[in-house]
Amino acid sequence: MASSEVLIPSNKKVRPHPTQNEALLFEKSSPGKRAYKLPPLDVPAVNAAALLGAAHRKTPGELPELSEIEIIRHFTRLSTWNYAIDLGMYPLGSCTMKYNPRVNELVARIEGLAEAHPYRPDSLAQGILEVIDLLQRCLIEITGMDAITLQPAAGAHGEFTGILLVRAWHESQGNPRKKILIPDSAHGTNPASAAICGYTVETLKSNAEGGIDLDALTRQVDEETAALMLTNPSTIGVFESQIAKIAEILHAKGALLYMDGANMNALVGKARPGDFGVDVMHLNLHKTFSTPHGGGGPGSGPVACKAFLEPFLPTPVLVQNENGAKGWNYDRPQSIGRVRAFYGNVGMFIRALAYILANGPDGLRQTTEDAVLNANYIRAKLEDFYDLPYRTPSMHEVVFSDKRQAVKGVKTGDIAKRLIDYGFHPYTVSFPMIVHGALMIEPTESESLEELDLFIDAMQAIAREVDETPELVKTAPHSTRVSRLDEVQAARKPILRWRPTK
Amino acid sequence: MAYPANYRYTREHEWIELSGSIGAIGITDYAQKSLGDIVYVDSPKVGDTVTAGATFGSVESVKAVSDLYSPVTGTVTAVNDELKTAPDKINEKPHEAWIIKVEIADPAQVNALLDAAAYEAFIAEES
Image 1: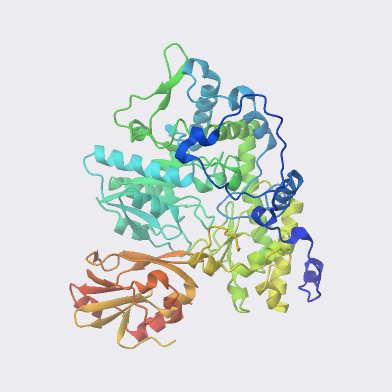
Image 2 (image 1 turned 90 degrees about the vertical axis):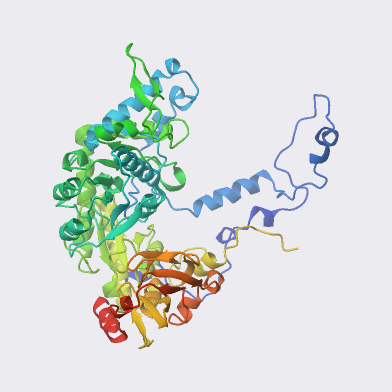
């Protein structure tokens, strides 16, 4: 039985290794320990108490006291508890956890780029400005749009910026309009972005294929509709085949088409949103363009738009002066204003450009094809084991449901936790909302056939375990330092601070 | 769990209990079961208006945040403050833990909602 190769919960009492449960630094502290030794004072001593007056602290703060090796071990041990794309496959659907190529990091550390200061005069910053300009031109070419801002710090921030552009344009036409349509399969950030820009959100029900219902759309779009926020390919990994028609329906009523570009990694080099009617969209450099994601960020969510929205872009915008030198233009009377300090997360621009140039047009196209191929390989190998609620062809990700396993009382969250025992990061659980008990799997192009097969073996083994020993799956994970955390208590009564127990 | 016969229901899984022109609104047993443990309830304030078919708040479980849809149009007359500290009341007694009470503008709106039998048939189809 496959499960015995991985782990079976055992009742044997084994004394856990100290690293099995790492105490907090405060708990490890003992008085008098030091991790440093300062040289003798070779300047005149200062009376801190006299200098600071009332601000001088009478009792020292209770900081942990440890030796250097204890601190090093503490953080090194914690780092081994982590999971990362550099350890194995990270099939978190919708998040596009692709490999962050080392060449990106190398380029981002080139001294002239890494040390560039935002207050440096334009005349001394031509190198980094050239990087920003070239990335802008590449992204405009890839998306088929006319203009771009690199300021937004992440995807949701990009949505916010994009919807502000929509609002500014409608206002310039005399009416900001009232509502934004959002499909029920959308990322949760979409309605939040629309609401924070002052719009009411109207949900658009998906059709039987998980796509936009054209009749419903036609019924719901009116003269008060500012835009539709659409993810294409959708969150179930399906390309919206009626996209041109959707754009037509919106434009006929003066509404705009916003595209959530979270899934752009399925389109790069193959289809351009600018060509299929999108007016404004965001990109996630930390998804599609291989910059670090999650704790390794920061993110970056550029917003590309059509020419009619260009006057509203955040200030400043990059311009080329008559003498050929590049600089920033702040004189933009119709601009929505700044959305981020300085120019955005510039370190990410360098990495994304490195990725684009290293791949080249053919390489980027190949990347898209490999991402789609990998997802479809997983789909083909797992569809006999897991229910596939939408049979429309998959793009870069595949969404199963836990329908078959639910009969045995095993839910998507249980399967995800069991996957940890097999050495993989879980897939995305319970999203999108239109699939009950969703298992959303996105392998990305980074994975080799060997790694995909390991993942598939694990998922097939878990499906067999659900049939034979469902309890094993329901109580997973068994290989981690702690098993199931009390998520409910953590949300209802969070403990946010450690306090001494004396 | 039984669905009270004197309540009316929406396809978005809210219930409404009518007494005079005041309707108490909550979510159904089916809804709380699909959501799992509820950890937060976001409700409107007394005096706010709610619109039939439009969202009036949300419930958050460890799994997801779900919108609450008002079964009727009207003005909020009371908010169940107990849910702020004990949102689990919705899991324990979904058909007693009302979220808001509303002065209904047009009581005829209630007639258009599902009765218990129709709602049970609807959820049987959905699951």
